[in-house]
Image (cartoon, rainbow, N blue to C red; front, side, top):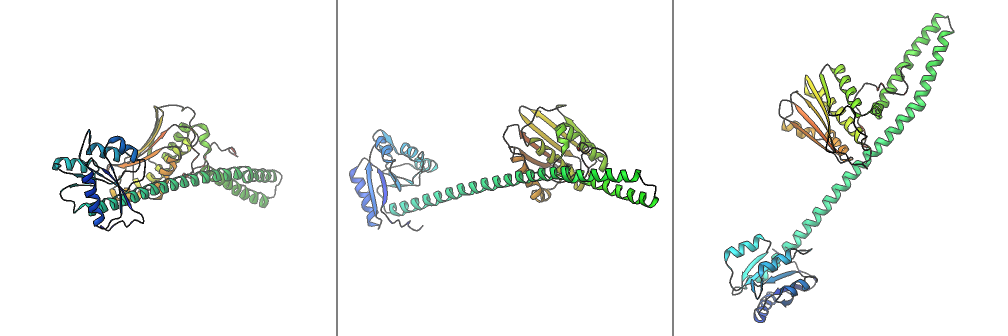
Amino acid sequence: MPSPAPSRPLRVLHLEDSELDHELAATHLRRSGLDVEMRRIESEAELRAALREPWDAVLSDFNLPGFGGLQALEIVRSGAQPLPFILLSGEIGEDVAVQAMRHGASDYLLKHNLARLAPALENAIAAAQAERARRAADRELALSRQRLSELAQHLQTSIDSERAAIAREIHDDVGGSLVALKFDLAWIERRTTDPEVRQRVQSALETVSHAIESSKRIMHNLRPAILEQGLVAALQWMAARFEKRTGVACHFRSSHDELPELPAGVPLVAYRTAQEALTNVSKHAQATQVTIDLTLARGVLSLEVADNGVGLTREDLAKARSFGIRGLHERASTVGGTIDLSSDGRGTTLLLTLPLTAGASAPATLGGDDEHDPTSAWGEL
C-alpha cells in the first residue's frame, strides 16, 4: 500500500515505559524515510490527556505498570475519531494478538523485529484514511437519501395541495356554471312547444348532465369528498363499488364502527393505498375474493388488502417495486407509515402500517376509481 505522503510530519503517540525502546522505534521509522514526530507517554492519565490533540497513529507496548495494551486500545477506539493502533511488545501471545485485532487493533509487532514497523504504520494510516473517507461517503449518501425522500414528500404534499385547489375551482366555477346552464335549459324546455327546439334542449341537457357527472368524477379523483364521512365509511363505499363494478367479492372489516379523529393526512393515505391495491387486483390478480381489514390498536392504524388471486413471483415483486409501489412507500412515509407487499403464490397481501402521530403533512393523491363520489356537494340534479 502506498505511503500517505503527508505534507507535515506524522504525529505518533507512543505508549511505552522504556525510553530506550521508544528511541529504537523512532530510529527505525526515521531510517525508513518517514518524517515522524513522536511523543512518549506511559500512563492512562497521560494517554487520555494526549488524545485531546490530533494524532496520526498510536503505538503501544502491551505490558505497562498498572496499565495494559488492550485497555489502551479500548480508550483509543472509544474516541470521536478512532486512530490506527499498533501493538509493539517484547512478547505477546498469538491468542492475545488475535483478540487485539478483533477489538480494532491495526497490527501487532514484536520489539526484536522492527523491520516491518514503518510499512505497518503506513498501511495502518492509509487504511484509517480510507475508512474515514468511506464513513464520510456513507454519511453523505445517507444525507442525500434523506434529502431525496424529503423532496419526494414535499412534491407529494404540493401535488395534493394543487389537486385540492383544482377540485375547489371545478366545484365553484365549472360546477356552478354547469348547474346554472342546466336550469336555464330546463326553463327553455318548459316554455317551448316546438318539437325541434325541445329535441335540441333534451340533447343539450344530456350533454350538461354528462359534463356534471364527469366533473364529479374528476373532483373525486383529485380529492375524495367521501372521506368527510370518515375513513370507515369511505372504505365501505369503496369496497361496495369495487364489487359492483368488477363482480369480485370484496369484504370490508373494521375493528371500529367509527374511528376517532385521525392526524392530518392519515385518512387520505389509507384511502389511496386501498384504492391503488384494488386497482391492481382488478388488473392483474384474477382474484375471486378480496378482503380489506382496517384495525386500530395501541396507537397504530393498520390497513390490509388481501386477495386470493394468482399471486406474485420474485420477478413480479421486483417489477412491482417501481414507481407505483415506490410512490405508495413515499406517500406512507409522509405520515410516518410503512408499506409491506407479500405473496405466497396463492394471493397477494398489501399491508399499510400508520402510527398515529400528529404533524404529518397531507400526502399526494392517486388517480384510480372511475366512480364518482355520491357525497358531492352538487347532489343529484
